[in-house]
Length: 148
Image (cartoon, rainbow, N blue to C red):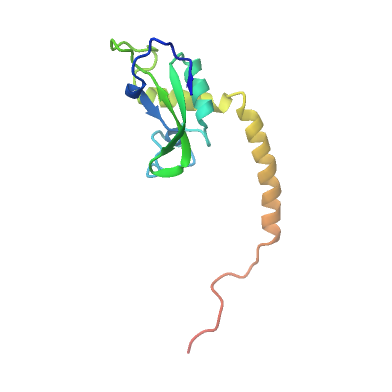
């Protein structure tokens, strides 16, 4: 699925690959996060990342059928063009992949579709938290008989 791309774009394979896990604050560095957890955002999606790249005036393409190699359950990635064929930057404010990741991570929490998703998640987690406290027992350990 190509979006916000001119027909003059020659080779999409040379664009930067951006997996949502790169800016997910819930993941560890070993799991694939590439920026600090304090600057990341919770559970970004490819659509949100693509919209943020469009807002930054960067050409992008969303690839839904691709998965992150370390965790194949994380489906989807975004290809972003940082430099044109002649080597000039598409957006002079973004000089590297890290700059792009930081700016996108700052924009994702303010995404219009994000507020609906967070409101639904917070209401379901509040009801789940109340039910899990009621079923907790005070007895700990493995139990069973002691051996003599």
